[in-house]
Image (tube, rainbow, N blue to C red; front, side):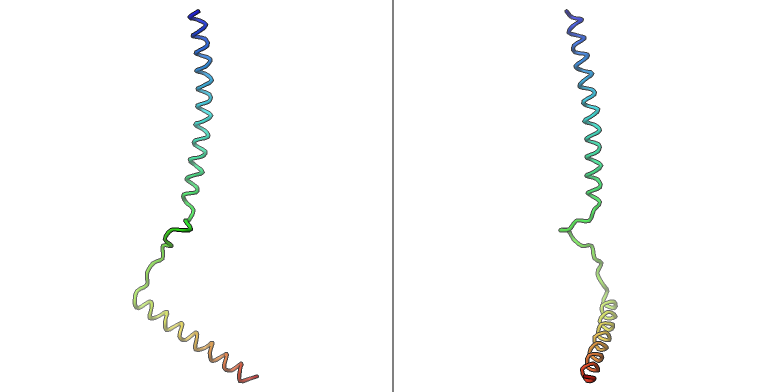
Length: 82
């Protein structure tokens, strides 16, 4: 009788070990998927922009003033041509 119980327990242990191996593979796959998701940029988090120095802001401002002056000049020429 002890041999039958031991045999039954060994079979049960073997099945449980195979299930554990299967679950370990599934857990590893899920952890890998979560790891990949963690690398994607978050849509609701900070955007990570760097600040501009005062000199950079002035340079951008000068460029934009020149850009818009050209646009106004071109619009005025187009309006005058009509």
